[in-house]
Amino acid sequence: MFDFLEGYDLLGAFWVTVQLTLLSAVGSLVWGTLLAAMRVGPVPLMRGFGTVYVNVVRNIPLTVIILFASLGLSQTLNINLGAQAFDTINFRLAVLGLVAYTSAFVCEAIRSGINTVPVGQAEAARALGLGFTQVLTLVVLPQAFRSVVGPLTNVLIALTKNTTVAAAIGVAEAALLMKKMIENEAELLLISAVFAFGFVCLTLPTGLILGWVGKKVAVKR
Amino acid sequence: MTEVSVAKEDVASSGDLVVLKSVNKHFGALHVLQDIDLTISRGEVVVVIGPSGSGKSTLCRTINRLETIDSGTITIDGRPLPHEGKELARLRADVGMVFQSFNLFAHKTVLENVTLGQVKVRRTDKKKAEERARALLDRVGVGAQADKYPAQLSGGQQQRVAIARALAMDPKVMLFDEPTSALDPEMINEVLEVMQQLARDGMTMIVVTHEMGFARSAANRVVFMADGRIVEQAVPEQFFSNPRSDRAKDFLSKILHH
Ligand SMILES: Nc1ncnc2c1ncn2[C@@H]1O[C@H](COP(=O)(O)OP(=O)(O)OP(=O)(O)O)[C@@H](O)[C@H]1O
Ligand SMILES: [Mg+2]
Image (cartoon, rainbow over all chains, first blue to last red; front, side, top):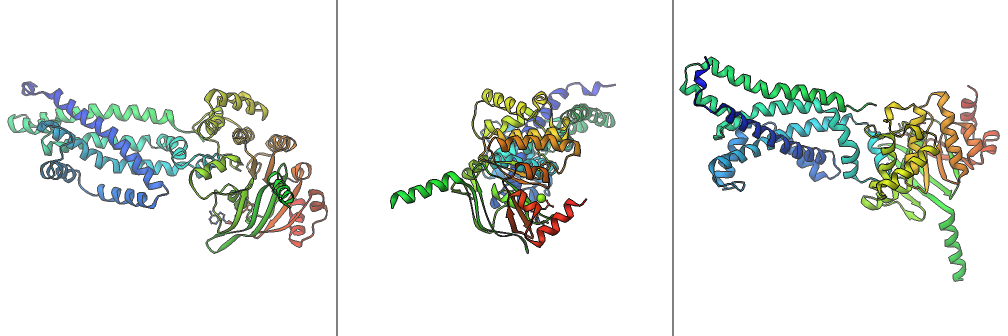
């Protein structure tokens, strides 16, 4: 029944999906946190930048962002992110695009987490003589993160599925393989089912594990 | 001639710890602090009382610049309050603050609450900071709770931890903004006793409170505020038994007769 799978590197394709997801997740967590810090910070220029960034980026379709990375950065400006091989360039551009896009959502999730931290927490920290960055990194963000594990899980699951957009610039992840198989094989329904199952295998445990983590780290007040 | 002026400076630097000169502050159209002049000497315990909305909290908060002021000057130990950055942070470390709602760091243990400032601001090494933290926690009577989280403590215990957290910075002056107002009645005394001990040990304290017992027994001076102004100041005995202003008489009659 699953003969049609023969000759295709299904696991290899999903492994690329996993790599895209993990690298983009780490990148967007870092950049998204920095954006959130800018948006709550005291420097007007940074606040403005953060606000404009988030509102522009999250309103552009991901496909457009990834195509821009490929056509604009790589092919027009010759920015190839330190890679030579075509595959590596596209993989890195896809990660860049995914990070640029996902970080806008990470930023907003973290910002809503910051809003759940009572102002008294930051005031007590300032009263001790901690500077802005210390107040943020030692007191506010640790509490903010704990309250947004749920929303961040949703962002991560969306990111996992969004990696399929990388197929648009030829990254050999799961969706590209699926397209190839649909063109070559007859079992269309089964092929879709296999790939759907593959994604559920990635996202379902993510949701369950992080759901448990979220409960575990929740701050009691 | 020279000697005289040196002597004068000496008195100023050893005597007056917190000096506010014609301080004004607005919240929009609301003039919350109106030409406040207030001098607090080293070792002095000053109780600030007054009706709700008279600006007591705001006064406290301006002294470590959690609120900015519109005009006037505030100096602490002879140094004017810096505006921003490192200077300001250093000064804040010298001014301990205890809040009505405790504001212990919810994600840190009691011990970590008391070591955080020492390690991150004073750059004390971690082990020394923990020793000092444990000693202070013992002193305020919550040594056994060191490894718990704030949410696991009663209000009275949390407030005593908050006092220990402030003391850990070796502040020159401690500000208390209604430290017992959020507490159940049976816990008020345990906090007041810690404060009384602190006063006896010579700590300079500015305390916003309506606890008349504390004011009578621990304060050197009562400052009465109404509508953003200091209306009257006197030693506690005189203020409570023989207030001069009508505002103070009115206020006292309300809080003493219920
Ligand atoms: N952040 C703020 N923005 C606008 N108005 C404020 C702010 N904080 C305080 N106020 C107003 O300033 C006035 C003085 O407030 P403050 O908290 O200093 O009074 P208080 O004497 O401490 O009162 P209470 O006894 O109720 O604590 C009040 O009218 C209050 O509503
Ligand atoms: Mg108040």
